[in-house]
Image (cartoon, rainbow, N blue to C red):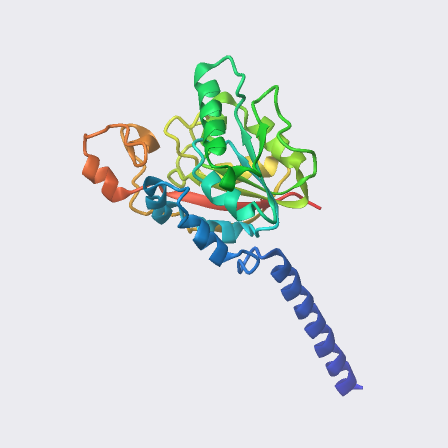
Length: 282
């Protein structure tokens, strides 16, 4: 009987192990097995990307970042506020044939000239290369009025790259996170990259420097209903002292001080960033 009991215990243990391994493999979230790294490498080398943007790969680590978020090429992926389109250059062609890329951007009919012009410039960029961007779906996310950039429950993965500090001065983080939560499928992933503040320091609620404390961001996103899954140091930069006269915009690519200490800031490189993965509960 003891032998039989031992064999049964081992058998049950084996089944549990197989189920756990299978569950992890199916998400591709830890190993990145579901991400087509070869395809991403081809996209990154494409002629639709400027040399300036390619030079930023060393700081933004697109392959490793998308692997961490589990972005396989058959997913429905929505990017929040793609700005000038740095990640659009990567995600749109990567998802073009088998998946869907949704750009949740600014209102092209906004009464604010800066916003309107930025939206128009983004549309022109897409139109200039239909061979790359013809399948891009463009939605509008402008709190508090325009908050439905995608059909509810239709998105596998939402990505927001260096945008949390943009929500905080407007106190719109709850609205934006609510819109993201609504757009995601149950079990869907929210991937966040943001300029990391000094651990243990008091968080400026307006994030005037552009830096956001990692624990502050996690608490904010958990409050919106998301479950924190994991963090990655893939976009860390220990050379960033985070005490610059013009905040994060002192560093490249902005270089707000222009020629003042330019070589110093170029040597530091782009900001230290946290990379976080959350999940919408099933």
